[in-house]
Image 1 (cartoon, rainbow, N blue to C red):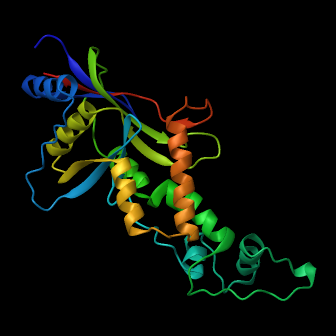
Image 2 (image 1 turned 90 degrees about the horizontal axis):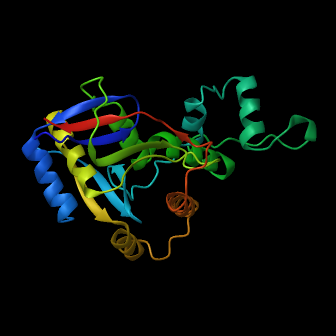
Length: 263
């Protein structure tokens, strides 16, 4: 096969991964011409899942259940995660000032920190916007997992007609901490699954439609109005709005290319 088919990945560095020509032709015929998915499952029966949720025309990747609720820390865990010792007077004072809005000069009573209870208020907002969106959400976990894999096995950048494009994004617009990986089409997902199998990751991509997923979630949580659900809804709206417009020049998009090329 003289013509090179490859997948460009806007990610961490520049490189290429060879795919046998018959596989590249099968992906092109199935995913591009017939517009059908082609996910070759791993050999292992006990595999993890990356969900590819179709939103607008693209697929957003989630490592694990996309509807998984955040594991909200307690006040004690939240302080510890920030390197603060609540038994230390200076650390405790700084914690009370930042997350309880308490100042000794106001003459008000010092608030009690319920160390064994889940965080609330501005601490919860801070956790969801920084810890969860950047590192702990299923989208952020997919970003971390894939960015730490050797998706590239060659430092050379190849040229040719791309089968697809995978994009790693940190913050899709100013003020956003959403961290995620996006694929524009089925061919990209097929190429990614092929590489995951080559690396023996025991990870399978499962394709879902966002509308269907939303309908299922409404049946499960028809009257949910908790702070966490509201934040998740707001984050999803913010994320979807970002997909429908050009990226702001100040967003943190990591540039570079990985290329899958037909050998």
